[in-house]
Image (cartoon, rainbow over all chains, first blue to last red):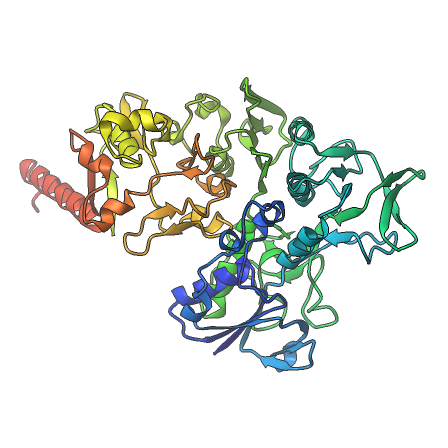
Length: 407
Length: 174
């Protein structure tokens, strides 16, 4: 049997391992537009900052593909999927036939459409090639703008600052990281980043850019005409599933490629996993662009492509940990409880639990020592009544305090 | 695969296992200086008194370990020979996505390096054919390092014998 995978990120790598766990000896072909072996996007900002290199970025040892019998084709760009012929068609016109296909083609940066953003001085930040391009462009930059105020924006703003570039982050609202933290923690992140040299331009609506006579980026323009001079800009307003290979095909998509809890698309023998997949579980559809979701969905797709019948039992809950300038900020679950319980330390640490109407723990935010994040996440998942575990916020709270008490 | 099995009915909370853990993971491995050498908070096992018993809080080296899946670059991985889940400190970036998924809260933040800190079942000792340091150090035999299936079979045999005895005692032999 021939398994073809489009993409070479964590979802595809995990799918390869799952196929091997099943003891299947099918031919696996990995088609990746990028030439490199699989690397993690999670640490690319450290690469830009110059603190790590390729050895820390790669996900698996160099012999991974060989040991798993994978034909790795770097630089292979997929134009479309011809599902009725069980083949993918590459941009060079060649065809690759499959018996099972995994679409794990990830996400693409959202590009604002207000103005033409191609050309000198403007970068996106998703791939290793993007990171290398940023590294090449930053010498001599006097003022870099990071357009966006989410997770990726915070990471690249840190990296540019660490690389010695004056950097300003642009937020549309008064608060950064709105999808990840509540106001208090968002403000803590902002204050911590500001103390480390990042500047903030908030409540600014981006409208365009200005270039000098040589065509070099010279300023960013906001709603109302405000101009801020800059000579480099990173677009980090968001990511969206990469639907390029399925557009106009019979494979159903909405925000992402639609799959069931077993990662099957609307077409027989075609699966999707990772950032690109919009998974439906018990009637709830969700795309979830986080690493644990890529790995979980990749595993299920891998097993099912070679004959298993596994399903994702529930959506992976929202969880994020942001590490900037040596400090960790974590959120998990829902931050919309009816009340909160919190402890704060002198060094700026925070442990905050969100309590739902039914008096169970529904969410948590941690600042500083985030090592109990998983423990709280498991209490959230098990809908633990808050009065079951009185030690919850104690500085010594650990797993032992939950023994025999959990529902 | 052998596992560390803890019997809380035998533990008296002396803490020798915590000390042995710190010593084993120090540079000198010399108990007379190790506690000065690195912070005692770097123990990878914690004995927690709770409800008149002592509990060992440590990594249980899950079969389908969520921390391994969560690790972005594979620095958290299973040692193939021993089955232990081990952090490669040279590649760990201290992002704590592992801790975010550990339901046991068994991954700490190393106060010195800022990296993930957890029980590695003394993987170097295992490769030398020795037992983990905590197991060897326990004066009351609260730890065993043995094959889990063996252990479970032993327990079942014990239960079966007790039940057999009870049924003879109460004349339930029908």
